[in-house]
Image (tube, rainbow, N blue to C red):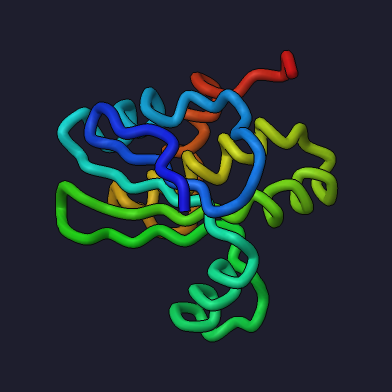
Length: 135
C-alpha cells in the first residue's frame, strides 16, 4: 500500500502500480463535501475490490466504486482503476473523465444522495465544472 498524498483533510492511497490520472480530487471533494470533511480515497487492487463488493453488496465481481460514510464529516471511497478503465471503454468515455465521474458519484453518496433524478441533477453540476474533454 502506498499513500500518495495527504492534504486538505484528504488522503489518497493506491495499492496498484502506476500513476494516477490528473483528476482534481481535492477540489472536487472540497466542492461537494467541504474543506472540513475528512476523506480517505483508496484505489484497491482487484482482489480487495472484489472482496469489498462481496462483503457489502453480495456481488462476486470487483466493485467499480464504493463509498462508506464513517460519520457526518468523514468517509472513505474505494475506486477500482481496473474497473474504471473497462467501463470507460465500454461507455466510450475517456478514462480520466470516467474516473472523475466515479469520484463525483462517490462524493455525492457521502453527501447523502441516493440514486435517482435528484442525485443525477446534483452530480451534473459537478460534472460540468470538473470534467473536460481535452485528454
